[in-house]
Length: 529
Image (cartoon, rainbow, N blue to C red; front, side, top):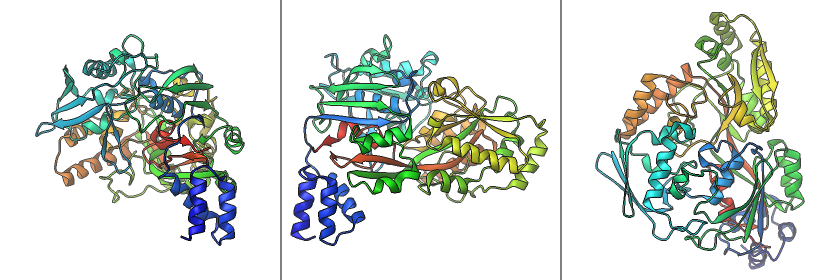
């Protein structure tokens, strides 16, 4: 790199030159726009944090029915809000290893049936109280309660005993689970004072920012938690998360500099935004997937032949190209892809087959009445268009699929996990057991396909304690095949995270685990200007 170009890069990284100006001057030195943009994005990783200012994110995936109760977070905005004010015992690092948060040490016995978490000293809540091991146990116990309706219930119900002694939390399991520490990184399991039993919606946690205003479906404002234990987080004085479900409005906001970060860029406008040198397109491939879910206990979806007919009538390649612009990969009707280390790539890829779909439909004995697929624009980016493509390919196979449009507001409370057939999305999880425990274990609160298979449950529980990785991979492969061929999940595609960042935002590190740096962007990013 020439000394002149290096000097320009230093000025731009320090916020003393706009992205547009850097790209222009780099171009004069013979560097293409694409290369210059990549150089500046990469340089942002090594920036020295700048303190102060107001950092704003505009996000799709929020509703007026949202709550600050971590147990109930089911879409992008509450996930991001809770990840900003709250912390879990551990986190998952970019390389897939375990990162320590409010737990400073993690250990286990030889057969992984007992796990010990040493709680970090001096972790202060926003109300001034100090976190205790008793708070951790109370938090985990609350998520086992059916009344909590927790998305983490499938994880914590495998814990048979929880004990707090001094600064140590000991969890005893019904069977060994080598992945348990990773499961404790689940974003629902935010540690709250007293476990959040008295007031789970208080929004009081130990995160880098504390909630000062919360208007569900509109805006949540935070100010810095001055006594936060981790100096590497919480650089801005204030942060805001705005719910902007409309794609054009969210895009216009980042173009105008009204927001600094945005999620869910419509693949159709990626090329347009690439022409704006003040905006960086951030992309990361991960375990997130767009789905259509059939509840196996509701007619007519209690008929596996009908479920197979619908699975065979999806043109996955068409959806990947037209909905994601190729920024993702085809799904195969189970929630695992190559982002997981024990993924079995030998399972044959399901293809669109109108003739086979028609045969399954005839075999199902369905009466020919309309099959309603309920969908809202915010179910996932391009959800309505994807449903329409699905309708066309199913109709071509003689299946009377119809799309029913629902409003975004209230969709995750009134349609998802209730309606017999609807659109949804999952952000994925760090390990296979967590994904399956959350959504496919028979007793899981968020088993949104109402899939119940005793053998599947048995294999999953056995896989948790299997230390032979080859055997464990084979068990996960068996589970994938069972779910693929008998479950209620239609998974056409896995999405890349495609997000926008203003050039003045520093500290961005792509994270395939979830949207906006797996919910950590507000805590870890800063404003250079």
